[in-house]
Amino acid sequence: MKVVQVRCPSCDSPIYSKQRDRLFYCDRCNVLHVRDGGVEKIDFEIAEFASEPPGEKVYIPFWRLYCSFVIRSKSVEGEYVFRLASWMRGEDGSGTMFIYVPAADFDTTTFKRLAIDFTVSSPKYNTRLNFGSIRRMPTAMSREEATELADFIIVTMEAEKPGVLQQLDYTLTVNGTKMVYLPFGVGPNGMVPAF
Ligand SMILES: [Zn+2]
Image 1 (spheres, rainbow, N blue to C red):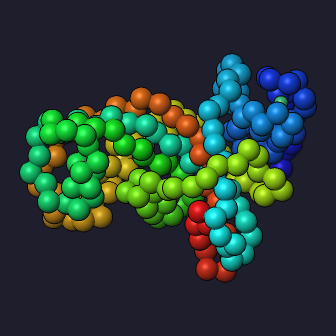
Image 2: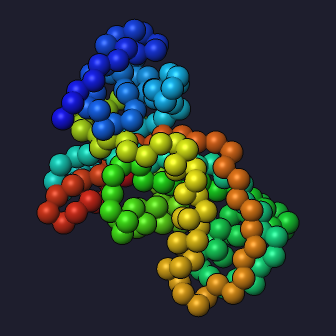
């Protein structure tokens, strides 16, 4: 694997990174940045481990999309959309929500499961300032790719409950993004959340 070296845009320290990680993290000043044409700092947070997981401690990257959601017409009995609707403030069929897009390189089944689990039930956690010595999975997906998957995740949530959704006419707008590193244990039984 090729290792690349760039410099931190904040403190100018060299950062050595495996090339398959799209994001560069400076462990001297805790700045995360991306180099896609230009150099841009990335808004991010790191969740603290709340339990001692089985297996190896690992951080998994997610793009957390802050979305506004407007339902124009609905005839919906789906549990998930009902839950989305229940988060909305007021009676006008609009509101905000977080969509979690797994950003490491996962197979489709794992991707869908992680996306749905955390979009349906937003993780609660304390944050920490750095990764310590804990490994993080490389980010394979760009922020733009994640944003384009927002609708796919909503549709996938409904597809999990076939036949329940009658009609849902909605608009989803992504207003902001944040990179969120969530703690897991990775062992013989797969990935277990540890927050
Ligand atoms: Zn730095």
